[in-house]
Length: 224
Image (tube, rainbow, N blue to C red; front, side, top):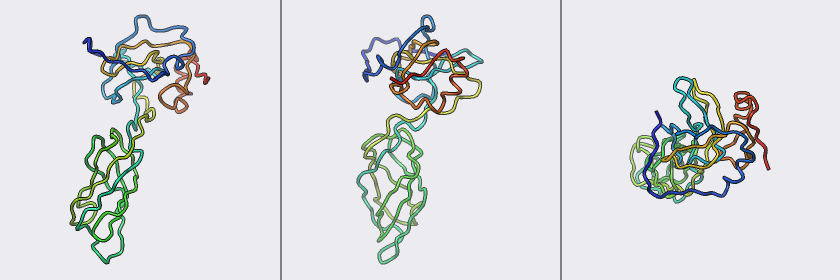
């Protein structure tokens, strides 16, 4: 059973898009629903988000998303000292090295070492859950055999992400009417009408065909 936070602590969110994300709300679930947000990491579930339902329990949930707060760009590299190769040796690039530290996970990079220090870091996998200003590093064993002091900062993150895969034994049900905090997931759900996918939070095209089939065309994406 989904549980919502009923505290009266003041918290609001407004990106100005709620009023244009829902074009025509012709029918919604009476009384709304409390969403099961287990595993949903964004702080806000924005208007236009696709809502799904577990067939076994009837529980409504926000469609899963991936790549939220992935690394958008790296900043200052502190090369460190004593890494392999050392001075007067040709540069060596270590491929798809796991980056450690920061608030996120899953990021990897190609790391070039020359003259005992790291000279270049190129992102391979952007990971998820990072924040601008995070300081990252790598295990010594993954960039040679010795060394200390290498760090690289996260300059920017991609806040949005993309829709993930519809979980097994779940069905598409509707569209979130108004943005809600993930900590207070009391949701109005449109089940018939039109919404603007441009104002919606994630790329709808990746799931448009499956969503339209599942909802029997009751909800239409109309870009204004």
